[in-house]
Amino acid sequence: MEDKNNILKWLNRETSDEELARLQESKDFKTLEKIAHYASQIETPKVNVDKALEDFKLRTQKTAKKGRIIPFNFKQVSKYAAIIVVLLTTSYFLFFNNETSFKTQFSQTKTFNLPDNSEVILNSNSTITFNKNKWKSNRHLTLSGEAFFKVQKGEKFTVNTEIGEVTVLGTKFNVKERTNYFEVKTYEGLVSVAYKDTLVKLSKGTIFKVVNGTIDTVNTFDINENSWLQKESNFKSTALRFVLKEIENQFGYTIETKDIDLDILYSGGFTHADVNIALQSVTIPLQLSYKIEGEKIIIFNYDN
Image 1 (cartoon, rainbow, N blue to C red):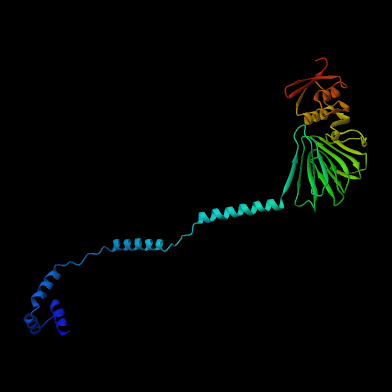
Image 2: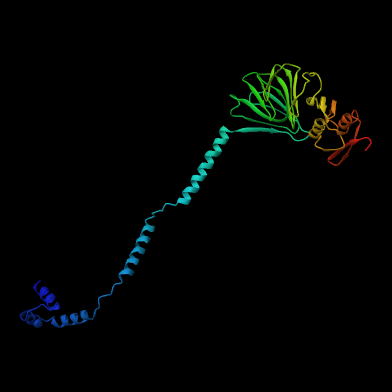
């Protein structure tokens, strides 16, 4: 241990003359001199502090990646949140706004049952919409066009149209709503009709009709008379414009008129089986003529 201390002192040039003399007498002194010589040639490395700091930061980042530290990705989370919102919204509309619709095209009719087993026969170019999930507590539907109803007895049954509203408990009735035309016929039971500030009770064989915003004075009809349910349309003192519109609905043609009074009243009917017979049934009594060009029907006076 003492020799080791003497060597360290000598390397640091801290030995006394006596200690130096003892080292020189040792057999390893020449080796010590060589060590001292080479040690003096070694330069202390110069350190770039800024570079060292950057290297340290880089090593730290690499270590973080190896540790699988996942940063918070706001865009990713927002995307999943948006998906969840869409799913919740879709579920709401499926369960709480489950609207069911039935629709017919020109010259087409459709028969179907409502959730309470009430029967509906939908005339051509018509649409019915209702909420299936809420039907048990709210027997309410919207009609655009014409339909015949056989309503099962139960809670209030309401048919809503753009012009008026029909309410029943259980009965048979027909509702027709076209542009500027609204008509309700009662075949069985009692029907309540609301139009603006007017509320009317219709018993069997009575009719309520609004034409161009005016309530018609005709209030009865023959319940045994053929109707569109038997593929026949019948009219009583009805403006020609509405009769021609019904021909369009039943046959799918577009009708043009030339110098015709569309407000002239027509009483009669036409079959849905043949368009030529239907046109003759309407034009001959009114002294009119017609021609068919493709999907278009032109109606004019005899003298044209």
